[in-house]
Length: 392
Image (tube, rainbow, N blue to C red):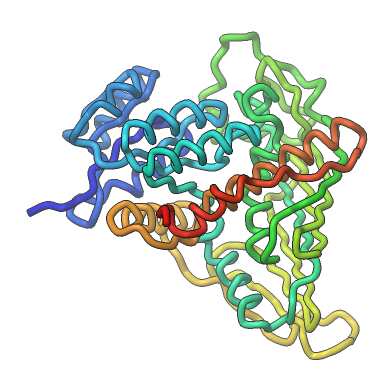
């Protein structure tokens, strides 16, 4: 008897790696249906998943009684509509980050999951990455004492190619890259620090990509956009016809437990790198790379001059699969959650709070750094999701 969970995939685009991770016939899950509005993309998916049903409308997929659960991997501005439709259809949902592009959208999705009782999982893959789990373990053991401040620098060398040549460049579809790209990092800040952002202020600007050549509306991206990268950044061309999001931003946060944090993002850096520093009452950690074999260094034996060898060096563990193995681990956790319920390492509440912090920081930077409080979540929703999505 084959008891694979039958997964329906809505959107077979840039995050198709999630669908690939979900297709493990005989090992727990199989892609049984795909919905995509692009005929060529849909045809490609059906070649990849033999025997899967193909739909040009997500509603047809949701009406399929053979689909047990749904992965939503579509552009950010569609998440509210598609996730809520799946939840109302009684299909457990894996929703690719971010949860939404406004606080209101996030709260609507959470409320719909609460009211329907349908299980919701949000795919913040960095919680399953080896480098983040290594840092989390260091903090949880108390190796650096109680965390007091977290600093994150995010250099995005491919930013002009990945985020300024399609819908990511439009406020209407993302709110901004401080939210869209930063939601992962803000969630990691919260996870490492043990709290959620309560107050923010930020500065940012469209410094490089605002005046570069754009494509006419309706013109597709060049087919080589993921293989050939222009350098220097000022040489980039064929940008999206609308570019109104910032390419550099600096965000300051106060968390509800008193931790102070900062997040910086630049889309015209020469290298791609995320650098985390966490300073606690008894030490500091910092990552030097995020791939298997890279290092997380800890200094915790007292005041000295800088020592590159640190006091303890942890290696990022080996992993296979996309996003450092995180995609496969998320799908496995989702399937287990659909079958059995219980706690998960990812959290819809945490996903909402990372978006809320990004939304308010984006408002702040567009108002010359005006500080804003982050809206609280309805306590009933917090209790429901923190309690494993069961009602007492």
